[in-house]
Length: 261
Ligand code: NAD
Image 1 (cartoon, rainbow, N blue to C red):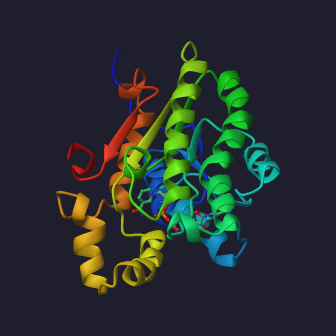
Image 2: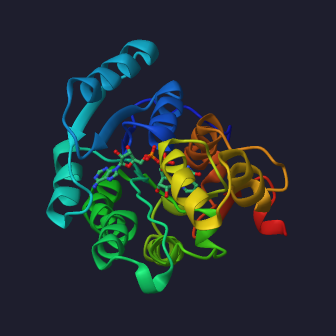
């Protein structure tokens, strides 16, 4: 049977997609023909304009649905409002950098809620739709920090390791359905979440911006290049293709060799 990469007729819900990797993935899935649902916790004209721009550029339906991924009922409501969810991209994420003994409890709770627990809720709401449609793809955006650790990022690393574990469980629970569940593990991608870490890292390490990028961020990325949002989108589109129908319960590293070290 010929391998198809077209996503015509599929609806993709991408959490946390009004910037960065989520937006890059939404654009690539729309390019492949999918209707897309963008999301974040805000509800601005700019958010809706992003959806309109994608719709116009790719000739697909694109909507923006506000939902706060730190709240379980919002996560489930996002999927219900989407009405159809063939492709679920759990991407929303935040970061905070501090030694464990100074790590604020509210930051720990927010990171676990947004980066991990949200995926439990969206998957629970989306799987019945995927089973009914007879096709589905769950793609969780983990991180090289879902496979390895670094100091000062305890909550993030716990959440990212957690989402890798959740991915494997979803894959096993859907193994006999035409549904797959995988995690993409990027190295550093230059997006707002990374930009925001630079001042904290400069303070923690007593380094300049350039030194943080070269010696801290890309120190473990042997390619010495940031991953791009387009590469993230292309990897997600591949996981949605027929070629990837037997790829499930695994992680795909897009990290310039980080996890080979
Ligand atoms: P980003 O800050 O550009 O995007 C994060 C997205 O999540 C934004 O759209 C933001 O609005 C949304 N978001 C935050 N809190 C939310 C909430 N409560 N409800 C709904 N949406 C919320 O960052 P990014 O780099 O594009 O990160 C996207 C994902 O990729 C995250 O899960 C992040 O951990 C992961 N990741 C990023 C990198 C990197 O280097 N940029 C590396 C590995 C993993």
